[in-house]
Structure formats: structure tokens, C-alpha cells
Image (cartoon, rainbow, N blue to C red):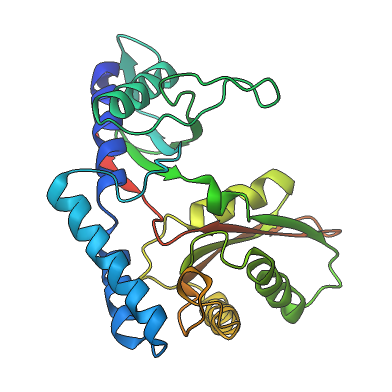
Length: 280
């Protein structure tokens, strides 16, 4: 049995909130820089070059890559042999979010009530997804999610009669309808299977997969490529001004489902699809 002080969780979450907002994952940054070289539309190429300059400035000045520093989404894998002391796990996470957003001078964007609104003032509460896993470590991934892209996300409950092309068409139509709203080039997470809420969680989880990694199942890896090509064929381009690069990367997470259903969710991320991880 390993004891873990809740205060360490708070400190780790705070640091990850700041890190994720100031620096994109290296593989995603590399993808954007590579896209700037490949884009054939001069206007689109110029926009991608501006995005690269923006990343450089954020790193140099230690400021967020985007002014929308998002709602804090946290995936936590908690080892079953960990005993958290000096506080509860969820409270420690939320204290970390508050600390990170306030000390990092990150924009606090959480409305206290969905209808009556009002700002919570510290970007809490976080959206927390927790899994109990074997071992004695706590693995934390902080994924701030801006809502310009989140608002463009969709979920559809297909029937089992739907085929592969139906799902591709749904993904493509989601981005066609989104247009320039999610600040393309986008990163797409697609969840297939589970039930209503599991499907959406899968799509959000897919956004945290390194863009350099393919789905380990060859069938779904091939489907990812088909979807990516179909989305880029829309030629929406960087910031909606046309071009080759509408989508930087697309990842699928799949899960068993009920015999009577086929849920599919598309979680749209802008080019600032941020996440940072730590193991305690």
C-alpha cells in the first residue's frame, strides 16, 4: 500500500493546467509545422505560419497559446493500492485547477449554473473521469477544452444497420456544418460504441492520444485514415479560408456496445488541442 498526500495531487494538477495551456504536445506542434510546409493555398499557408509564430511567442513569453484556456477536463487512473491521505481525491483535483488557473493567470470560464450562469471565479469544478486500475500510481492527464470547438461536437445513436460509410459521412458532415467555427485545422476524436455517455467519453479520450499514434487495431487505423482524407477533401482549410489542411489528425476510440445500438460521437478540437500528463 502506497500513501499519497492529497497536496501532491493539487500541486501536480496546478502545474499541468499551466503547462497544457502554454505548450502544445510536441507531436501536435510538429504536425502543425509540417502542415505549414505542405499547404498549397498561399493564404492557408500564411495562417499556419502565423499559428507557428503564436506557439513560439506563447513559449517565449510564458502565456497561453489561446485566450480560451478552456474547461479543465481531467482523466485520472488511480491505482487500487494507493491510499490518499490529508484530503479527498476530488477536492485535491479541484484545488489544483483553482491554483493553476489563478496563479497561471489563465482565463476562468466556468459558469456556476448552466442556465442562471455566473462565473465560479477559479475555473472549477473540473470535469473528472476516474478509473481504478491495478498498481500503486496515480496517472493524471489534464486536457483543457475550449468551447469554440466543443460546441461543434455531435453524437448520433445509429442503428446496427449503419455501415462504415454512414459513420464516415456523419464525421464529414459534422465538420462541414462546423465550417470555420472551431478554428481549423482541427483535431478530431471519434468515439464508437458503448452507450450514450460512454461514446462521448471515448471521443474526448481520443483527443488525448498522441497524434503520431494510430489505432492499435488495423481495421480502425484504416478507418481513421479514410475519415481523415474525407474531412480534408472538404477543403475548408486553415481558419476556413480554404486549403489542404482542414484536419491535422483523427483518432478513434472504440468500445463494445449493445446489440441494438451503434453510438458514434465526434469531439472536435481546434488546433490548440491541449493535454499534459504526470504520474505520481
